[in-house]
Amino acid sequence: MITRIYKTSGLALLIAASTLLPAHAAVQPLDHIVAIVNDEIITRQELAKRYAEVAQSLSRQNTPLPPRETLEKQLLERMVTELALQQHARSTGIRVDPAQVESALQRIAAQNKLDIAGLAAALEKEGQSLDSMRNTIRNEILIARARERDVDNRVAVSDAEIEGYLQTQVQQGAETEYDFSHILVAVPENASPEQIQARRARADEVLAQLAAGADFAQLSASYSDAHNALQGGAFGWRASGKIPAMFADVLKPLQPGQIAPLLKSSNGFHILKLNNKRGLDATLSVTQTHTRHILIKTNELTSEADARSRLLQLKERIEHDVKFDELARLHSEDASASKGGDLGWINPGDTVPDFEKAMDALQPGEVSAPIQSPFGWHLIQVLERRDQDVTQERQKLLARQAIRERKAEEAFQDWVRQIRDSAYVELRPLD
Image (tube, rainbow, N blue to C red; front, side, top):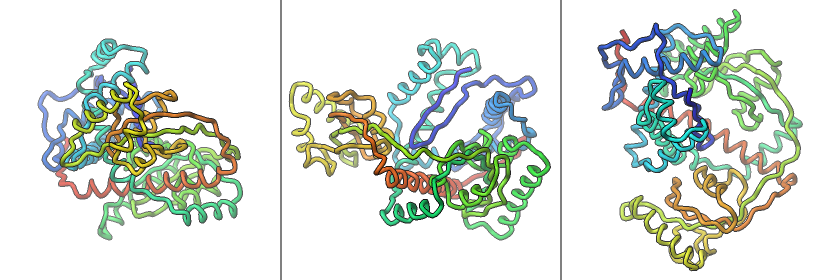
């Protein structure tokens, strides 16, 4: 089986590229529409393909398979949401460079110790193709870029929030990490009292099944509207400051294996299971990077191709001994231009993921190829690196990261719900 992990914006998606259908789940020869999302459709065959992939994934995780009808409804809702997000990204001008898709394919092949030809052969054995994988990767990148632009890059953390966070940590003692799982029964924005009552009844049904000994991962796949529903709702280890305060409050008194009382938020109803907990290490050492860059922004007058072409010309001049800082002062459209593009010492997490990934791949003195971020196109040069003991700065650093991560996750859930609720969706019978 070919697997891949594509990471961006703290968002990690594990895709199993296996599409062989079980004998009992053969696709019907006559296809039909099962959902309309704005001006696009989802077909029965597409849903059947997704069902087969998920069924195999749950089987590999030793998770009991939910009833087919229940799982298909969950998957269809997930496909509707994904399609609405893709449409939003395209309609707001986000485009994916084919070179980035090909680069992702190369990484997938390398992770599986294959070349592209070997990857194509392996996928063909599993009923897939390179083109279908390219399409999946392209759609993931579309959504990731939209999230970076609309959510992650708009999250701000104030000094007052950091001070409040630190005071809370002092009162509570050493920070704790929780390994927990989560089921979300979402409530639509502006829901009627009847809708809220129906969703509450659904959440109560899940709690009752858990109390009777039902498998949490199976119920997550059957009922949860969270993005990690098909991974058993598992969040893994999270510091208490990096999860919503209401989650931390109910997890704190629990013992491993216990289920928290039902929680209500603006997103819906939450069910949490504590798997384990532990204290955090008090020391922190990070690798800092001293870097500078040249930024060309895209707009009505400067296309993506124009920005990339300009940077390629600038890189060629740098390779012919023109000084990077001089070109940055003349051409960069960033506030750092007056300092020759110098960004100073950068900690992990200080920049957007695309920038950080390209920066981390450079050796001191090396200049990157043009790379794209939500801000435009960049040339990056790493000047030097150092391992820095930041124990004394640790509290504020972790506080800022924790608050930012928590706010970004909450904002992301709101963003997804708003886009889904604003889309025209028509669901049709699955039979």
